[in-house]
Image (cartoon, rainbow, N blue to C red):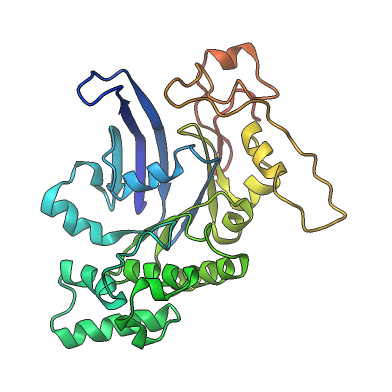
Length: 321
């Protein structure tokens, strides 16, 4: 059984022109997304800004309530939980945020930040056990135990992200949603954080939904990669297959923008015309057809389903083979 199975998930935000005015339309941030994550697996999620990646991640951990669909975690529908039930189950689903500067409470010490989750889920029988757990977590992420008494503003961006990782690990989760955890960091620090996450995965069997816009980083850390565009899944495949032989035109354009390390290797750059359409008024048919270089008439009226083109390789394109 999959650890996480998302079925036809939708997150639509109402649009109003005033506080008391009626709903005029909806922003379809996530529009019918389905996928699964196995225990101990890393699924990469890529796409342009505004495609719905972060909204999807936040909906999975219930920081945003889904409009429709199922979020099956260990066979239980996470989307239907509320109150004390949701709080208890949330221990198993944690998140590492993108902004290491804004995701930590500046009024709390590092020890209080990490200890808060331990207190909520009653994971320490005594204050001594709690303190030992905090110090152990800090050492695990490469920080000195004395840092527990310091405040977030005293640390660099990379150190703050390590604190965020320690906070997520404090409750021994089964799945962590990593919402672009390295995008705000220097390249050298990015590698350190990615390697740290991989170490914890190997040691503790944690699964990751790794959200990023850097395809190279996602390829390095992920077993499978999912590509989103305008709230929908365009392609889902093993990372090597998707990077080396993408089937969807949008994925092909994304991959063509990744710089090649080998100077002898030449990759033809695909330039997409126009801008991403508004999620308030998405195109009919395939959401990518206004920018697609190979679109046909049927693409304007028929929404493509996610088809399995090869074992484990899925694409939502009428023309993909």
